Length: 203
Image 1 (tube, rainbow, N blue to C red):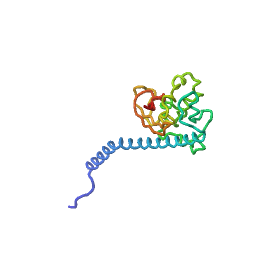
Image 2: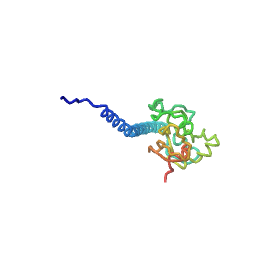
Image 3: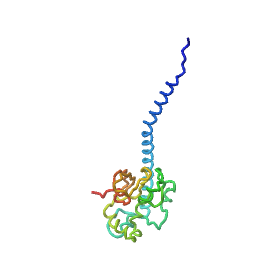
Image 4: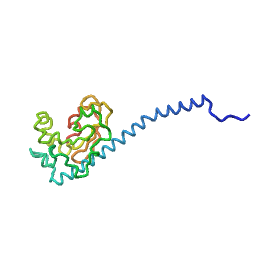
C-alpha cells in the first residue's frame, strides 16, 4: 500500500503551534529593532539640525562666549521672532519631524513647541523668553552653567505612547545634541520638562 505524504490534522496543528510560538518569541525582537532604527534616524536628524545651526552661527559671527548678559547673542543663537532661520541651510519641514511619532501626552508634558517636531531648545532661554518669570528663574544661569553642554535640539518622542515627560519617577528616553556637537541618548528618571534633565554641566 502506498504511504500518504500529506500531513495529518494533528501534525498540521503541531506545525501551526510551533509557528505561533516562534512568532510570539520573535515579535519583541523585531519591535526592539524597529525602535532602535527610529532612534538612530532621530539622532541623525538632530545632527543635521546641529550642522545647520553651526552654519548659521558662523554666518552671524557666533563665538563660544558663555558669560555676561549678551552671551546668547554672542553665541550667535537666533531669537524666536526671527522665524525659520534654518531653511536657507537645507532644513525642510520634513527634517523637523521626529521619526518616533507625535504622541499627545509627550507633547503636552515635554519641552516642545510643535507636536511631533524636534525642539530648538535655546528658545527656552533666549532673552525674549527671560521676560517670563518662570523661564528667568529656571534658565537665568543656564548658559553660564552648561556652556558647551547646553542643549540645542532635542527629541522627546522616542518613548512609549502615553509617557509623561514630567513624571519624576518614570524612566524615559531623551535624544539631544549639545552645542559642542555631542549627541546624547539619555534614559533616566526625573522631570524631563526642564532642559537640565537633558545634559550635565561640564566638569
